[in-house]
Length: 246
Image 1 (cartoon, rainbow, N blue to C red):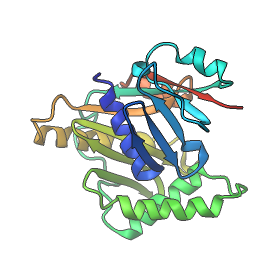
Image 2 (cartoon, rainbow, N blue to C red):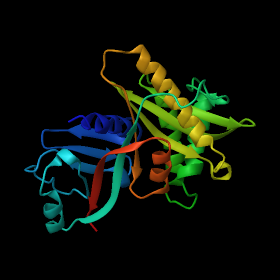
Image 3 (tube, rainbow, N blue to C red):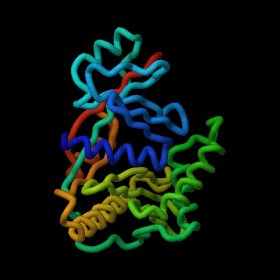
């Protein structure tokens, strides 16, 4: 199952940034910091659906029959997450000017969290303050992790765009792509992605014993993000349909 390596990378991100991941022979349970990130992933067609499960994510190796089982149990189709991949090769000839290649200070980690809050949160949300603090805690903790690189792009000193690269074996995953609303449409996220691809290619060249390197990310099927990444050379590796109880 070569695509399982892409899922493993995604699960490593969820474990580091969104909650906890618990594995068993029957399935994978993602316990999110909030309910929207929680889900159960079956790993065989005969696995028993855990009691109280609200969201199920299917992968190609979940096996046949799950759509019918979930429909009979009252689940309804929701979004489809597309796991995409692209060659691990640079799209620029040199590192991108203005990008912090690897955040090395708490100050830059705070800038990373600031951009995430501006891009992902609505100030009217009841848990706005909680998530702002959580983003800060996670950024400060994870920029020190040896398997992660957090990227921050500033304009006139203001932190405006971020992403991160997480490595598991030969797979390099791109996550947390975000730009403050006032700075969107300037190609900043594309510049960060180019830096991440550069660094992934450099790391892959330095490690020759872990298999063919792969670059991956996830998007919602049919979204603007999917269309953008297709233009940037990514292709769909597999689909992961979600089902939720109403």
